[in-house]
Image (tube, rainbow, N blue to C red):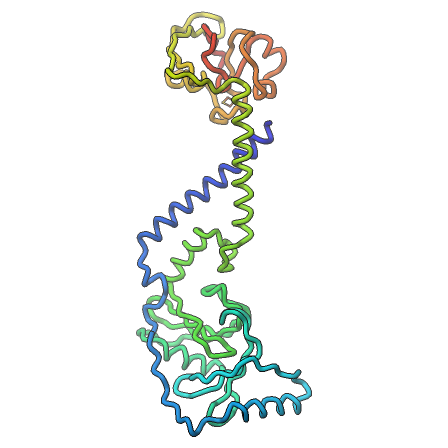
Length: 347
Ligand code: FES
């Protein structure tokens, strides 16, 4: 039973802390500026469509043929499987996006080849192009400080699995713009406001690994800890009930009890309630009994002396010696008024 109580206390500490975090972060969500939290203060939302000269476009069929010939000639390249060809635009340039590996979402691992829709030449998103693409979506006052290549994801968009270019600006919000290397897709804008909001999202969704995933190991573990808290609390409640610590009466009963000191000299009388344990009842009467565990029956420091006939529960068997129990020592947090007429304070 001691182990169950210990598990219950540690589980309640962990669950209690997380509940506080939920309350705090939930409160912040109510107060936060949702526009700022998106990190898009300096994002241009409308991309000007490019005027495509249809007659100059390469036929997709010809493009496919060219691609398959190239892969045959290039010994190093394995055979390319093309899933789709889409006509799109990069800045003012019409391009074909040839998708070799299409995942369910753009942020999942995808594989693309970009081809100039007029000339048929492959388009590579290098640092220079990434900077141009980023700046085309930016309306802030900053200048580009640097452009860096991120092969595996990034902290601002943890769900992104594709390699990206990060373009940093020197504005007051420390804006970063992310461009996917394979397709030139604008992954998103981020800045200090978004990072601050993301921190609270991380706390609220227990995404402590910053995986951008609600279904994390921590949350599964937390669910098990909560289950343990419930089960151990249930077992503990049954134990208390079996030890007669829950009494169902309609009206609360108060009665006077005599207090004695260690030498059995009278100290006076206190009025105790039948439904309050002796530790709490004495505390309410300004008599402080030592307690480390707060009435949990695990520290053994709230000893008092009652009649040797007073009932004994499991916590008292574990914390008091047989000779102490025979003399009438009990834990005040585990005892109730019952038939007690005198209480000897031993500490
Ligand atoms: S207060 Fe700790 S055992 Fe009673």
